[in-house]
Image 1 (cartoon, rainbow, N blue to C red):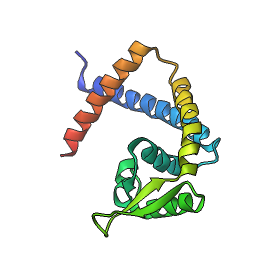
Image 2 (image 1 turned 90 degrees about the horizontal axis):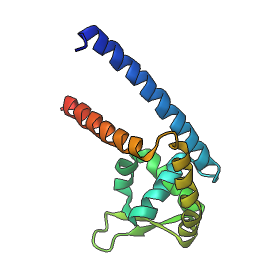
Image 3 (image 1 turned 180 degrees about the vertical axis):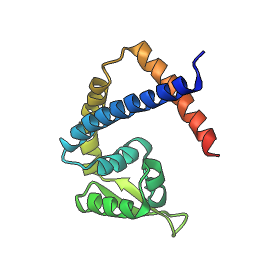
Image 4 (image 1 turned 90 degrees about the vertical axis):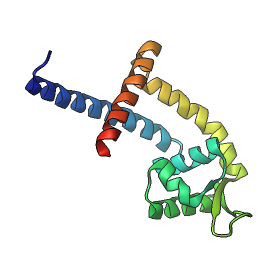
Length: 150
């Protein structure tokens, strides 16, 4: 059994390793996104709409972890480039949805498979069994930490 000091040192070391790994993976994935002439937040909005369909503007920020003011800027830019459009909700006039345009759909149909390949390549340092293990461990870690926030 580890003593408290050793557990603390181990936790600090794990945090550094985890942070460096995340930073490397994130940088690799962002480079892929930028290779398609998109900013990572633009890609995140397009990916959300691509996989989940039209979304209320008010919910996009929380879905991709971005402040509402930034969402307006990103949606404006994507709309200006013809990749999405705003569509009023027929059931609630207070709600406006973001919807992929045909141009946006075509773009995502072309680049998302390439992006998925880049993610697979970026995580290829682990085999399938190791990936499954890390998924379970990160879920456990995230849930435990979430409980500490309560």
